[in-house]
Structure formats: structure tokens, C-alpha cells
Length: 591
Image (cartoon, rainbow, N blue to C red):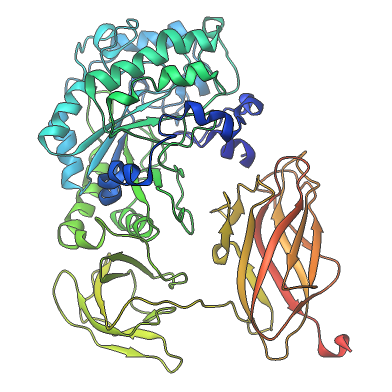
């Protein structure tokens, strides 16, 4: 998947990108300032508006629409989801007939909201209109909506709004503002496949999208508006889509509107960024199985342990977890999804203090079996597995006490010979996640842990260990530093070289899409010591190549910062970087 496109228009709640509209998506941020509804907001005003959301941490995403009727099956082929109309290239009129079969009589808003509340979720975001163009609310724009076009004759968005208020949960709506496969002029990934889709996108915004957004904001007054898939629009288009924002001063909107409007929240999809988005509000959206919408053949449900560990991981990095369910055509959330959510909710009933209202861990390099959240003067250590031993690398302040949060049992605290605090294992650890509440003897202080040589003397600079500057982020499968589309961005590592220092050969593992090669990057370790790489195309963003750089990099002894930066970037992006390996040059070769 093209990382330039992803950075320009964001991900999609279906893992597909509008590749056909790449170029016009790059509207300059300065030019968009006038169309950003929150451009003149002060930090204090933003903090007040975002306060409840930052405290909430856990929300339910609901993808529900006409696609629930076929349930992933079309033309004898199964495995489709909410993109079935696009994937199977179903004609507009033929797909619209599904509305006649959509009668979800088992839908009960209080039940759905009750599941979210029992799961420990604090807010809900539901699809008001997905890319299929079918409105799940009673809109006056046309008859293509669940109230007018189906036997159901009810308004689920209205009912969910009321139920959420009764249960004291925040409610938000998802709206696909540009991609619409039903209405003429709506955008479509891969281009239109039916002449009925052809038309002018500005006319589409004027007659369908903007009026529907205004209805949603004025009739239902949601707390969140979740845009999806941006396409370059005129400034008038953007203004019309946000014209009602002033009537909802507390409204929170994500970063997928387009035209450079930053939005309030970053939206990594189906992954948890290795370091989160320091200094920004962000929310990982993720499916509970493999599809957003209902797919009858998809039984790959995440276990309660995976869901809980995801939540803890995200909270430890300062983000929120928006976890999706896909109800079927009867209005029922599949029972395996409900069961998994309730398991997480049971854990949160006794351990929620360590999640809600917390901030990110201050420790940069906790072991893989540990996470940490912070609230006031308390640190909450989450331990998934005690067998490797529990240590707190990077914590300079001594630990005063440690107790298991849900039982109150006190644990012994000691220090390893190199000064790292360690916690004794409890007699009966929680099989999902044992939370240890730590109190410190003084103000929180941390120290940096440089990367040291491995057994063979090499020093490995992995993507997960990097400090990122700019809009760069770490992605997974495999971990790599992506979104390198600004020459000013850079990457840093802190390393510890042996006394006396030495020279190192450098190899880089990277990937670069076709037509994007040609960038020159510099790896430097202090003044006067650097090596350079001319990035070549590797064929795709996920096609990795190992390249040995010419020259040698000198590292002085002790702790040394290493910086990777772009010298030139002729084609709009640099590369996806997986790792850099520094291999010591034998002393005899240095003489």
C-alpha cells in the first residue's frame, strides 16, 4: 500500500485507499487554515473540548448497513465485508434492492449500548452512512435510507442517540463524506463501474453529503463526527461540510476530512503505533475479527486476552481504542463478539483505575511482557507474563511500595546490581494482566537507556527503538518507519559504544515503491562522521532489501546519538525503514 497516499488521505475503515485521487489530496496546510473549523481555537479551549475523550480510553465502533444483508456472500463467492458493492462491482440499482430485504427486527438500541457499557466502553461511534451511500438515519435528502427504503421504518441513529444518553455514554457518528458508490458524483476506489455513479463531486457534496451532515449534527447532536476517505474538494465543499460545527462547540472530529484540515484525532487503523503519537490525541480503530461489516464466514474473533492487551498497550502510549463490532441483518451483534467484550469489561470492573484517565508511560523501553500507565502520583504496571521477571528499566526514582490493584496484596521491591528496580512475582498472578500500583519515594524521574552491542559486537537500530521527529510513525508487519514524506523529518537512536570507540560498517534494510526512489539519506554520529545511502526502488513499499553502505561510521566511546536524515527527496517520499545494523570493523583493519 502506498504510504504517500496513506499519509495524504488517511486510512479507510476497510483497509482500502482512494488511489485514483492521490495528487489533488496534497492541499497545503496554510491554504486549508481558513477552512479548518477549529483553526482559531486556543489550547485551553481544545483541552476542555477533548477532556472527556482523553479520559474515556475505550469506545465501540459499529459498522452496520445494507452490506449486512448478503453477509459477505455474492455471486457464489464468500468473504466480502462492508466493501461488497465495490469488490463485487454490483450495479447501483441491483445493490439498492437489498433495502427491500433489510428488516432488522431484533435491533434494540438499549441492548447494544448495554453491551458497550458492560464492556467498559465510554463512547460509541456508529456508521450513519458508509461508502455504499445508504443512510442509516431518516434523512430528507432522498429516499435512500433505512426509514424510507426498508420495511423496518425506524431510525437507528435516533434510537442509539437516545439509548446512549440514557446509559450516560457519549455517542458519535461515522460519515463517508466523499466516497459514495450510490449517488452520482460520489467518489469510488478504483473508479466507477456503473454509469449511474457518474456525476460531479461538488454537486454531490451540495445535494447529499453536506445536507446529511447538517442533519446529523443538528437533529442528533453527536459528540463525535468520524469522517472517512478524503478526496480533494473545493474550499466551499469543506466549508459546507463543516458549516454546522459552530452549533456543537464540544464536537470532536477526526483527521480524515481532507484538504489539509488536521482534525482532532489521529486514526491509525488495524495497528498500534510503536510509540503512539506523542503530543497528539490519537485513537486506534480495529476490528474484532477480520471485517468491519458483518461477514457470516468470518469467525476469526480476537480473544479476550488479545483485546485486553491491545487496550493496555494503547493506553500505555497515550491513545484510545475504538473497537469495532459488525451486527448482522437481524440487528444482532454476533455472540462471540459480545462474549469477548464482556470478558474485557469484567477485568475493567476491578482494574479500570489503571486505564481510564491515565496518561502514557514515562519509560521508553519496557520489556515486551510489561506496559505502564500513569495517573497523578501513581504508576500502574501491567504485567502479562511474570516468568521472565519484572523490571523497570529507565526508572530513576526509587519505588516506595507496590501492591496488586485488584487484591491489595503487597509485593517486594528490590534493585538489580545495575540499579534497575524489580518487582517480586505474586503468588497468584492474573492470567490476563496483573496490575501493580506503584508509589514512588519522590518526583518521577527517568533516564535514557542507550542501545548497546550484541554478543558479536554489532549494534542494531530497529524501527521500534527509534525516536521519531516530524510526521514519521512506526508501522508493523514487519515493524518499519513509514510516512517519510517530509524532508525535514528525522530519526534518532541513542547507542553505547565500547570504550575507545571504533569504526563500523553499515547495512540498511528498507523498502521503496516504484517511481519513488532517488532520495539521499545521511546517517551521522556526531560531527565529521557520516555515511550516505541513495535509496533505490525495491518494487513496493513492503518489498524489503538489505544494502551495505559505502564507507565507515566512527562512533566515539560511550553514549552517542545517531541521526538519520534526508539530504534530498526528489519524488515525495524517502523509504520504509526496517532496521540499520552497525558491524564493528576489526581493530587490525583500523590501523
